[in-house]
Length: 178
Image (cartoon, rainbow, N blue to C red; front, side, top):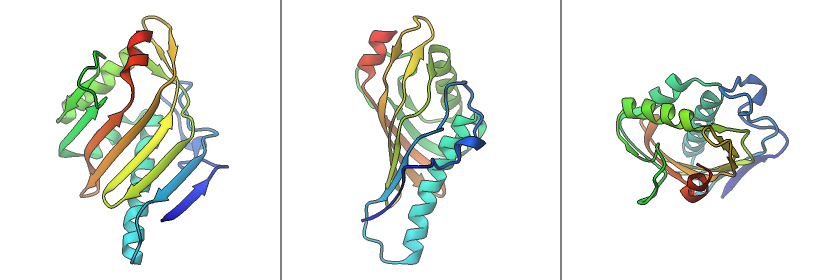
């Protein structure tokens, strides 16, 4: 296993972000990247690093409100599940398979919750997958209730873009706050 950790500075540089919501930033976030495979060649190392850097760029784009970049970073035939749940009643819950549906997802979520600063974010990669663990509190627009939000995101990279995105979290805490 190869690990690259930096608990003193976040990647991407938080000073380069202009978050869409004043409380959403990566400032002060510790970042740890773990490559959970045996690397046999320089090319394999470069591919794993580029997948992590691609997802870090995606997080930076989201942080600065560049949703067009985020949408363009998905393949035409991607599949997104958020949350990965069979019982969630959240307004934005479900599976999406088009860029139009992805835009609607972001619009619906923004109408209902305001994210706050991310906690520590950990990136782990193996092959074409990048797993991101993190947390951040959010506030429900309608009620003003604040809730803690721990999550895991699994990105499958295909042809340099997101081919599949699975977002794991417990929707129960959010549903109670709504």
